[in-house]
Image (cartoon, rainbow, N blue to C red; front, side, top):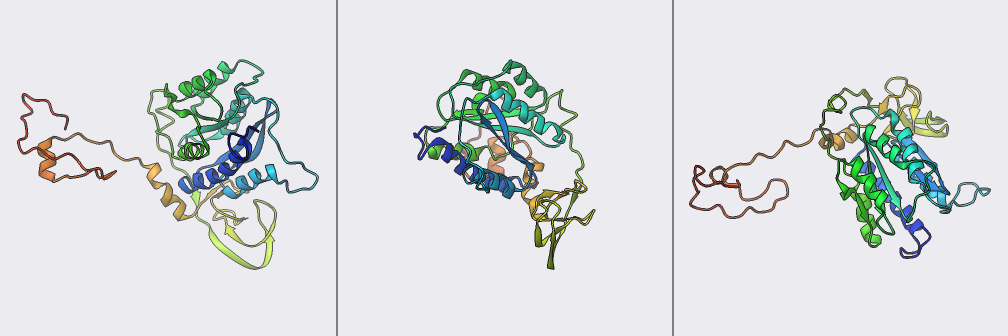
Amino acid sequence: MLEKDFRPNRFIVTLKHAQDYVREFFEQNPISQMCIVGMHDGVCIRISDLSGNPNDHITAIKALRDPPSLNERPKEPKGSPSLQNALDLSRAILYHTPSHGTREVIVVFGALLTLDPGDIHKTIRACVKDRIRVSIIGMSGRLKICTEICEKTNAGDSSSYVVALDQTHFRELLLATTTPPVIRQTASNAQNSTASLLMMGFPSRTSEDKPSFCACHGQLTRGGYTCSRCQAKVCSLPATCPCCRLTLILSTHLARSYHHLFPLQNWTEVSWARAKQRGSVQCKGCLVPFPAVPDTVPSTSNVHTNG
């Protein structure tokens, strides 16, 4: 990660784009949660806890270069990475994910090796069993083990493993993973993929004359949001109430996530006659114009049309 093919080096570029990723992720998925871990010297360390507050993650990323305490040294990439330790820790963090959510792991990998303490293939099978999808963005070259991880955790689709060509390409690949993945309906997870009710709270904004402690960070603040169930005060939303574990969001957050909760209906193939009757001239989704409808519509009895 200290190579200088990305200016000033891969490590600094990754930290910079990771902050943009956190902002974009919660802009697209405001009711989701994220945790950041790092592969360091053969082990996997937790950089930020699982949370839905983007400020916590951005602060933790900045602390890698600029520690808040003078006694702490900046964290630097050191030693060999371990994909097995990273996947095992990710599985443990995502263990309590509810059935209505998806479990995803995004890996930024700058090395050409992985130093694993055991059999990584057992870990891959465990990730497939736990319905965890792994996407890897390489910064050096393609590795066989990375291709195998992405193929097995994404139902044979290896397109989730890509290698960045430059800084612009790396940023595009990273931000492309903010879009929620497709929910695959199989016999094994049919029961888990069914819709379920999720209890949420819509707290009110409070402004106080005298500062009081918030329940999330234990800091004195004059403003915040009051939990609709236990009346505890939190700094910002979306968040999970530290006291009663209720999901606290605003109505705008739910509105932005609405199009992910209810996917579009499948397209229905129609004939040229139907298209001519409706007067369709362009796609309603991407606005690409259709080819001209032929004046003489062939009969479907002897000629097969593609719609």
